[in-house]
Image 1 (cartoon, one colour):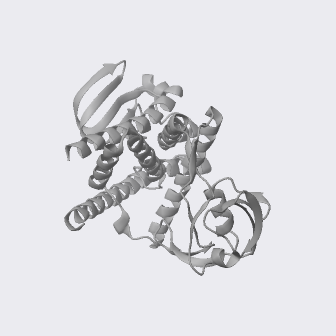
Image 2 (image 1 turned 90 degrees about the vertical axis):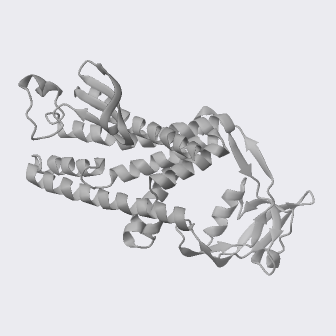
Image 3 (image 1 turned 135 degrees about the horizontal axis):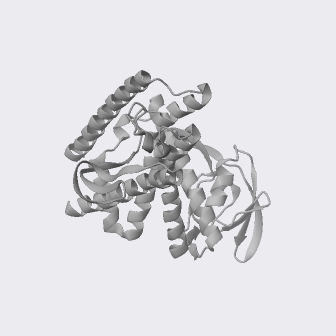
Length: 355
């Protein structure tokens, strides 16, 4: 339990710091004054004031914030502070300051994946057949255990993943497969068949398959700096797209809200990853960082996405949205977030008691 709490604090601390640092750096770049840079909410525990900025750690470690000069549109601003006031900056500068938080979380994921690829490289699974399912298209087409698939329809398949992508997107078309068997190449024709599978969203989908299983033969490949950067960007993009799809499916009712997790579940998962080693923990931080970026960009008032909606409206209509409209929207946003927090805590407690 203690390890889970410590791991949770580490994960949350890193994510909050990076998120708020994004806001802070871009705000300072555009000349906005920062009054507070806080990790956590509530009463100040420790801190140090440098210039006008109070850098602090606060009592409730479930978030953080950067308080900028003139952040509230209806706040009384000392005329001397207008040059460093957030509200008095051009709307596109405010958009970039607000967007910098979620973008920093995505950048953190890229940096983490880059470090993992540079240190560990990648493990590549060879397209080597280990087992063939009885009465499958592979068996009917003449494939055998031990075959190494070299090409499909003339296209080289250096990895099991590349081979799988071609098969699953074949739409049932007969494939010309070149295999290496007993040090000699053979050409075979195999027609994939659809088979129902559960995807990562627990939806049943049809996927074209040959009915083969990997032998497990693999090799480690070291990556250059540019290859690691490319892979890390691709990995971040893939997880981001899957996360957005998950949110959309959740809103459509195609995914149960029971899948939502709160701080208790995240603490448990962080503890489990910490036990598996530092690599697992930092990978987990990258995943949660991407999730945090997506959640913050949702168009809910009080979140970064809600602020961005107001600023985009301002850019479109030429003047800020009225204070009254913003107040009502923020109250509604707070209510939505409170209900969501209660629900995810309920989910977490239910999992603890009945799992």
